[in-house]
Length: 87
Image (tube, rainbow, N blue to C red; front, side, top):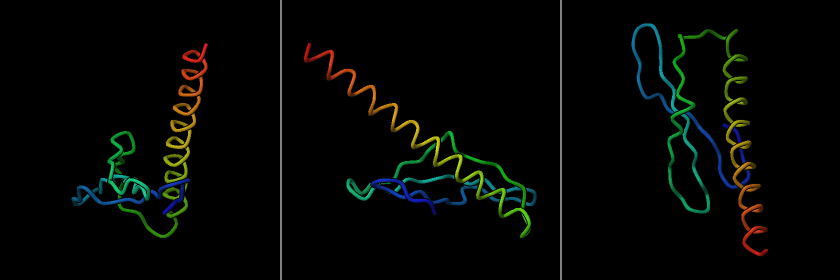
């Protein structure tokens, strides 16, 4: 589980078969208390052994960084909008 500012991200298994599992990342927002599926972060992974845990952690970090990047972009755009509205 990785923490972001107001929420944390966790993974659920959405599908499972012989050769792979599909993980879905979920944001649990502490302030608004809702679940949001992130479709872009759906992953299809082969079953893994202990050596591949690092790969999973890297994937998780990438997902978290993408989410944080999107949040920063939204904040920036909102600030720009406010400036234009004020002027």
